[in-house]
Image (cartoon, rainbow, N blue to C red; front, side, top):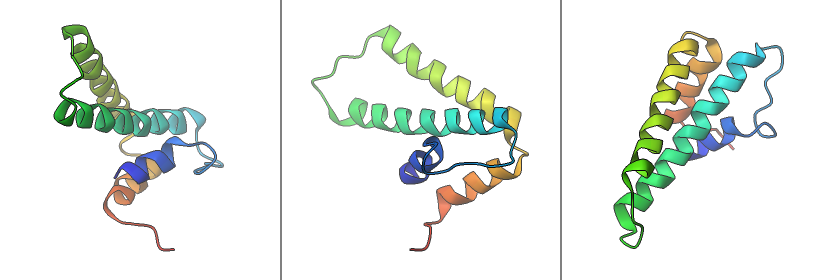
Length: 93
């Protein structure tokens, strides 16, 4: 899932041609948020040296809420549905 999110989040790895730029932008924001939140969750779960403030936690919750809001705006688009599938399957080499 992380690799799929990183692939979509990168303009050089997933250039979308002929698709509404706003939709592409929103999908990339969602993918980047997924990657960031997953990395931050790993820090929260396994790095006992990291101190989380209330503000730090609220920032992460805001990131997730924004991603869900963006998802709501594009969830019926074909590229959004393709992204969901890419989270579940690996691309063939």
